[in-house]
Length: 257
Image (cartoon, rainbow, N blue to C red; front, side, top):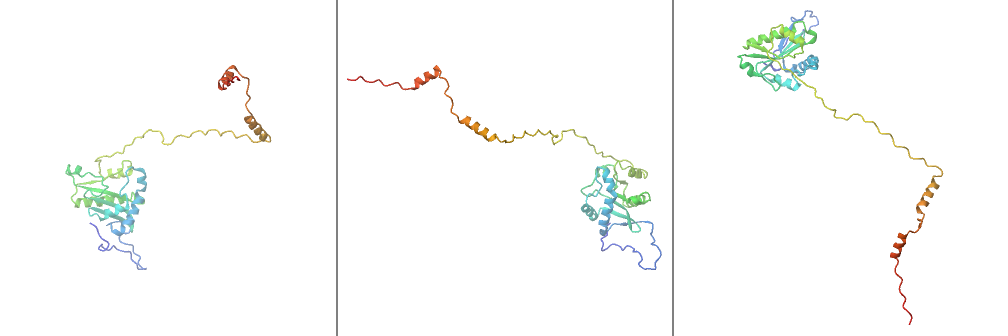
């Protein structure tokens, strides 16, 4: 059952009279109430702080995954959200449902239908770290059990990480037994790195020779040698023969009359 802020029952406020010395009737006691829309941001920040350490150690992220999803849960009539306070400070949050709802659910309802079970799903149970061991968790669980009985439920079903030993001990002491297990398995893949290993750098090329005073004359001599005419060299019989073939034959002179 949800309460809109405009129609919600007024909560008792602290006395404003300066001379009032008596403490509130519920001082030092755990008080439970339903969550209202104005509490959404406050409760969301409480869950972030409470589950920060748990989310560092577990594969599955604790719900809700986003604030938007948390707002949607408030608007869902099938979800019960309870706040537990001590002297106005939020020390606990409990969330339960009687049907599988939401896009991030983890329950297969057929499992319970086939076994004639009518469960209450405990979606969230968060206690302030500073108040753990002081009866907050026990009171929250007792409150949920009371609601479950009123709705005709036969079982309370919840999920807890296998490596969360403190939570496991808490539930086992209260007669919770293992229903099923989902293990996250992983295998390391052996493969070559995408980037090649470092490679040695090649030595730098030798520096060009420095120009001296005689370098200009040397260049001139080199050019002169290249421009010098080729020596004819000694004649050979083959060359003479080729020369004779190329020379035109002398014209025969006509005898004079």
